[in-house]
Length: 80
Image (tube, rainbow, N blue to C red; front, side, top):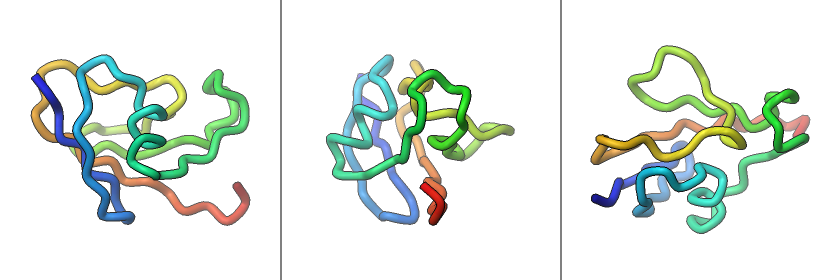
């Protein structure tokens, strides 16, 4: 079952498969999520997923199973 992923504030929507890496989905959608280490220790790729209490690191996160729509709030950090 495909998941509809909305990236905000970019207002870009793409379809993804559960288990697919969030960074790959963003890249396919033309969205740039900055990364510093690709191992989760620098937190440069943090995004908020609506309905989750804490931000996640996009380099470690994947599209969850059981969701039909995922809304990802991307930070716009001028440092990265």
